[in-house]
Length: 404
Image 1 (cartoon, rainbow, N blue to C red):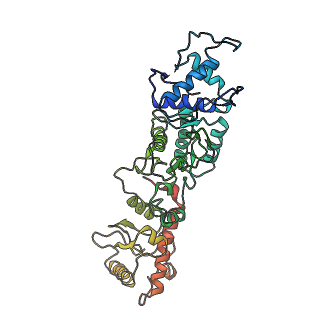
Image 2: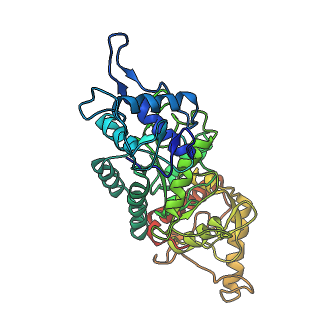
Image 3: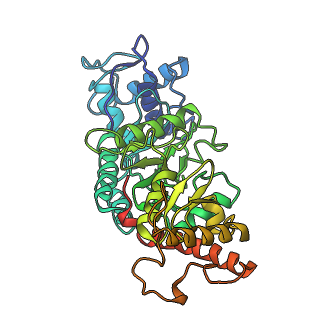
């Protein structure tokens, strides 16, 4: 059982978390049946406030198990107890811990909180570690994920785990999350740390906590929908999230917070003042056959012709084969390459011209889509849209070589 930080009851210190824990024990502990009354809990509910009902329940418990003779047949003084009060390690606290049912002898409550929960067992912790190790993360970050899970259990007795789709996401999964209408993310394919195994979403699936009447919640999910049904992040839910993020960003774990509202999220590096879209453009350039950049609200690309970069749309548009390529754009890119080639292959202020994709042998079949002679057609535009999507696919496959 989590120890008290101070006293509870009549004239006690009565911090919220201490009161909630003592009350929860009294809710789960039954007074013996008598001729006149059946067995029943010493207290009907808990709320973290020490009122008359709580003091009366403490006194009733003491009269039954503390201020009695060894044979339990008559009242007797106890020098290690105070009537109506539970103190740290005193006879009343010892008796409470001994008398509560065995399934509830490891109850805990977060500092300042009033939601009592049952400590996770070692097998439950190991199951979370095993599940996390079966998922995909960058190797260095996996160590931090496991450290966070272990330390959360060591400090708070909670076995957190990786949420569904909370490990490395491929670009298609990221696109699906962006477009499913649930406002899960605002990051497009390749724009999230998750896409490169550098982030994790951790949650509280399986947390066993007590409702005010002592009923145990057995089906809590990762996002605490039972504790916070409307996901308004009420004070009690927020206390659990803050405990997780404090542990995750501690020196012993070394992870970093993501967006303030994304409470399950921890990542491998501090991306404050860093543009994930700029990093994706650099990763696309390294991974494929084209030069990429980032413009205002859109990605830019040389379309494989070298030289000028053209606005080709958002990550979601490109992934959906809807890049904003036009016939005029392809015509201009082709003419620019021809002019650069005539000038010796280099135009002032422009990157070197790439007459064919690096690593491919020269030949008419190795031109960028729309790069052949003749007017640019709609088929050329469609082919270029598909090629830009393929460049994203190459970046997706090359996820382990992404750099912050």
